[in-house]
Image 1 (tube, rainbow, N blue to C red):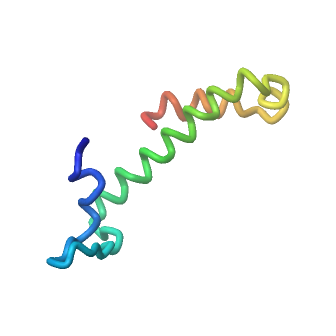
Image 2 (cartoon, rainbow, N blue to C red):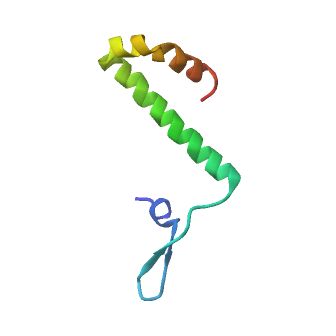
Image 3 (cartoon, rainbow, N blue to C red):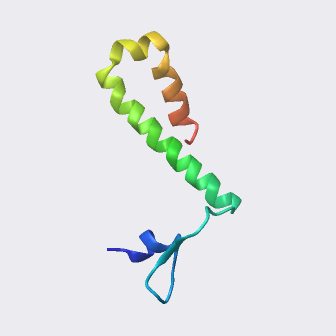
Length: 73
């Protein structure tokens, strides 16, 4: 268990209560988080392309997904 992963965005008080902290405003951290979310979404699309093959072809998603994959996303 990694307590820092769970509690890094919380502040613990002497009475054992927790206060959640606001989202970070650091530009680099936000860009990293956005990129990671986009990568997870792209991976989900690559999985779903096997289930909805005809729909992906019809919409032209496969070509766009390949372009995104090779763009460094």
